Image 1 (cartoon, helix red, strand yellow):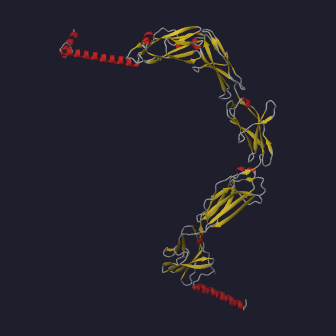
Image 2: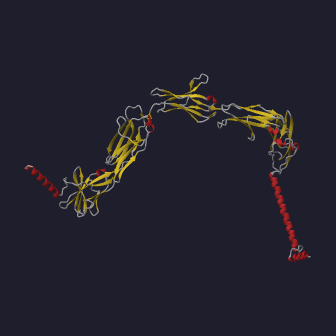
Image 3: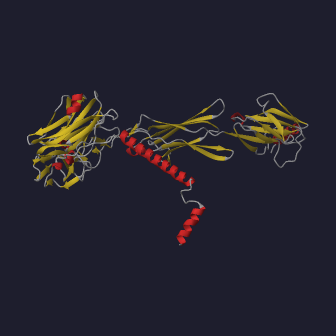
Length: 596
């Protein structure tokens, strides 16, 4: 080494010694700074020396070092602290007897080196590296709602992920179906950028671009933000999104609702489906049974063929054609047979059955269906099942056998598919009356309705022996009810009224006797006995009114109470006169007589 080299080395060493002696922070032989980690908004505790140090820090200066330039921010003298003017003036305080400097309201701008320099001779400064952290907000993901075509030659934007207000800058990772995505040439591209807010926090924006295939139509994409806090490493995930993927159809087919066996009267929808997105333009055709050609059917705005109500004529072969409006490619579905199960109108023979009393009658039921049929016969007025099968045998007919009979034709294999037909059986006979005689209690000059019911075949007609306003109601094809509105006059009370029913086979009557009684309320008998059971009855119907019945009961009870009271009084009278041997002497006398 030459003389000039020795001189330079000496000068450098001397300069370093002078800087140490002067107590000015320097750069030479600096130890690794102590690390202090704090979250934004927290308080940093800065110690003026290692935790095991026992030095006296009653006199020390604190510096903040930014871009290698130290700035005095706090002085400690005789254990008392004093802030220097500047950005830290109101945020610093001493703790632990002056050994710790507390910095409050931590922000990202506080991430730097802080230096504590004691004032003792040859004292070496203590450097502290302050690290600041802030968890980002929940990541927000926005999907490309316009969608991506599989025919695109370059990666298209799938979604954008935004993570706001984090520190330091978080790391982003993209996932598809829980598998992380990496950069892949011409397939996957991730473009990220960041913005530094005025607060010093970061906002991260990441865009995922990719080439997608048909298999990605249901893929779930999401992003993940990774960040660190004093407590360790953490991460936050966005929600999952699905991007619309457009691809041409490869197949079309028909779908029928409802599924299963169809029947007449159902609402049936026939629609076309395809495995393309967007679906092609659809048309539905049905085979013409006469020409065997497929003819297009009229559908609604959604391309759905609605059959309501479905009929057997709708059965046949259907097919769907899909036309891709972008590629003009046409696809044809397989033909599908539609079967609408049916039951024809039910026919009963004879259509208007008539018979004499004591004879027999056979009713036959017929219907057609594309499925196996079951028949059964029901009595219309009771709903009772009389027979199973298409034939009903009625033997030894009585007048009560007249009326309605219903044939039910049903398909057991198709629930709810059935048809019915009602037929009325007429039994020849002269009119039957509900009553032969009826008595009514009335008030003079009152208006009342007289009723008369008759049955028979042919259907009887009814006339009245007195004047009034009459109206008739058909109870069934062989029965009629006549109601006469009359004014109670002395002449009517004397003659009464007679109802006469007649047909080609005879006549019958009902006599109504009217009696005047001011104490009785006008009451019309409402007997529910069948008219057939009373057809030839000669009994007189007399029904005690409800108020009169209650009066008789009350009178009987009162008489019984009075009789008992009189009897008790007589017995008590004889007892007082000594006529009854009920005393003690009488009892002894009776005992003596008994012993004899």
